[in-house]
Length: 211
Image (cartoon, rainbow, N blue to C red; front, side, top):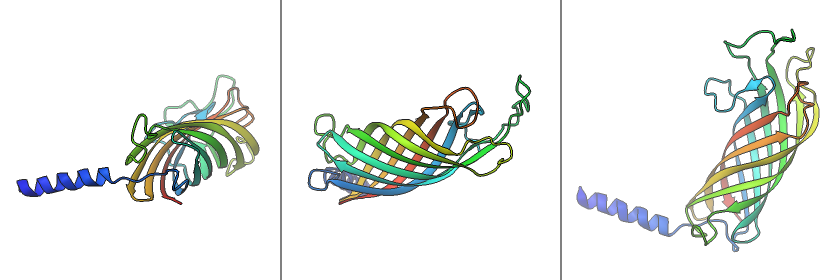
């Protein structure tokens, strides 16, 4: 048993040592995936609420190696975006308006710059676990899914400021899994007709390949 454990430990060390990532030799990465999207705005905050209904999306992500520390990235997500009134919420606000459920279809395109911690300074450039942060901007298309008579969502295109953090796991040569936690902040409050700018949170799980 001790010999088996020792063999497994040695194998894990060798796997870690022979890691691969997006480098100057493989400058492009394409990833596909999806996850959960959450609303934060005048109708309430569903970020990190495990009992909130699932609003899912699919995604495609492209990143291009600029240098050891930075990548340029472009991504598109498409899915549901909404908020359900919770059981303990008041049905009516102080101004007499009804607290309604909201469901929309959100398509987002984002351009961003990514700072990589696996850059040869903080972590090895070919590290298996490669964390990063990013900042950029997006264009978001909103369309109604229900409550069309109530107009709880204002259909149209809205700009956003975007940013987030992520962790890429380079598990085999040019292949990777990535978890990305992204935040979008709408630059106007034309979305739900209330008083403050709305936001969205995306938990995105992706499988990628370096080219």
